[in-house]
Length: 202
Length: 250
Image 1 (cartoon, helix red, strand yellow):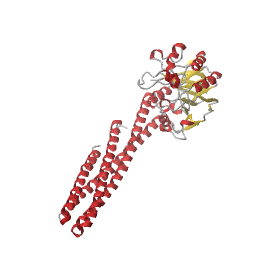
Image 2 (cartoon, each protein chain N blue to C red):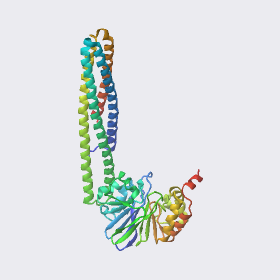
Image 3 (spheres, one colour):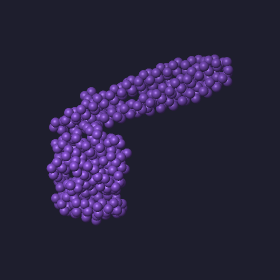
Image 4 (cartoon, one colour):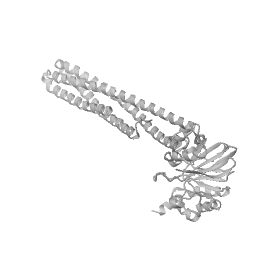
């Protein structure tokens, strides 16, 4: 078990996944706000009629984006939960391994059966470590998807600003909505970046 | 490291106490574990907490192969009694741990499952160990609500869990009680506070006084032998315990 993470690193890793879950909650909240805003924007565009046809299409896109982002965050949250379970198990295994190793070291002639127990422990430990690694990679992939989704969101929120300019008497209201869209999307991106950085650092 | 010392032997039937660990951390209470062996059957009483597992395991290995321990007995559910269960099961997944039925669904938090835990009914039970029998004797509410002691009628030894326990200072930390009056002062505070029921205490004293006991072996502190056994039972019967004494101290 020479290249196994120490208790300290596993604890740090556990804290990292717990922080990730907290960050996810923040993103989900913003995604929910975008969804409500987009719904209102669709209704506003409907009222505005032909001058806001483009704005309406963009609002629908933003609404789909928020739904997709929420689903992605749910998957991330599930993975983070799985990772917390795995690392908790890892911490338990580490403690057991440490105590069994100490017992083996104290015994003058450890029996082959005791050595087998240690080998089994090491194998199981490696297996869980591998699973944690896999979950972290999957999380990183999902975070990358979320980042791309937000970049797309940034692009379409800018298009919304342009479309708002064609809104005539609804122009001001549409501009306000498009500005809020932009702000919300801009709020998500740093959160996603922070989550990516937090995961990559481990 | 803890040391193993035989306190009774008759042919292949023996009791070994694993006690006194000078290297244990101060924050961990010292405990006595007892190995009962008979014709190759090995039972370990109150195997202890996880943190002392290496010391118990190593001390046992000087007497028997610890992997050959077949039975564990947990007098109750406390962590210093049985939190090492998961580690023992790592060594021997076939081990059976006997414990009050009350705790059979609590102890799996330390390890094990319905296959590794054998529930003792409230009224107690006997079980075979080698060619002999041992008895799980009820000691409920002393101090746990589901509490048992273990009696070996052939060896005339009663493993009494926390009953008889004493918090002796290092300079008086003898394996056997030498001076009852001096020793019992270190048991008084513990029994007053931990033994919550006068009724349960008197019930136990009455039953214990009818048993043939040459040695009364607690989980902490020194072993009572000979006349000190009855001295202890009488002392305990007289001792005010439980909530009333706690209130007096406020």
